Image 1: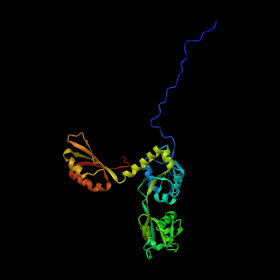
Image 2 (image 1 turned 45 degrees about the vertical axis):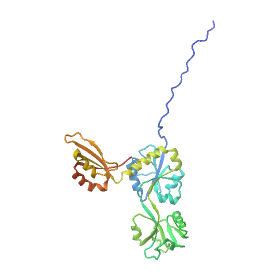
Image 3 (image 1 turned 90 degrees about the vertical axis):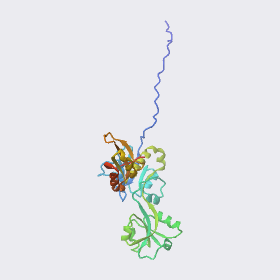
Image 4 (image 1 turned 120 degrees about the vertical axis):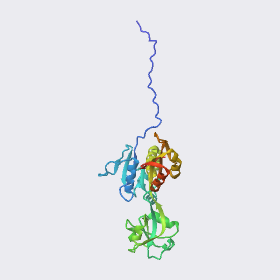
Length: 313
């Protein structure tokens, strides 16, 4: 007896469609190069901590170290090498001086001025020198650790000079007869005065910058933006403090008149039988000393002054 084919068709089961993630999480790694030593190394480490990119115990510092963020690692390098590490993609981001970026002529994006490590690259001669103008240095010997910047500076003024490359102690070269003038970094001017040197021109103003690899900016844009925001929020909070106080409603206008703020004070009702309001404001910490007495006279009380670690707009 032959069997008949079944009238029932098998139903093909299909897997449910996966909804595409609206905000895919970053799964790669961003490498940030920072100085392993030098005058800006300590402020940078402080910036790392305050921004939330905490580093582990550095008693045994490695070349590459992870941070609290599993997608961010730190590469310790010489400040002068950082621009090229970033330009070539060995690091996605770097923190170094604008002078270093300019000297290495590195093809990077300067994302953020971190506003510390400020200095000026100056042209200086001996105190007792007859030279008062850069135009008197035609054919002179110029000692510097910044040959590229120095050559560009003199070329821009059409003054031929002989560059003497030194690796340190630039201030001593005029006294030793090695050079007629120097081009060197100066932050306070004290080192120049101590070595009896006089500035005759400013060559370049510099400070510490966050720099980025151009390709990384496109491929890791979201994560790099997150790091930039973290660092920028610390920079913005510097020199600011947070004031909180209670004020009787009848004295509110008087308090507001003496209280500066980034966008005006925030006023909130207080659950009190005295008809109080709470007033909060961000102010420059240099003004706090004088403000306290003015606020008291205007009717403020229970005044609290707090430091600010990060400020995000």
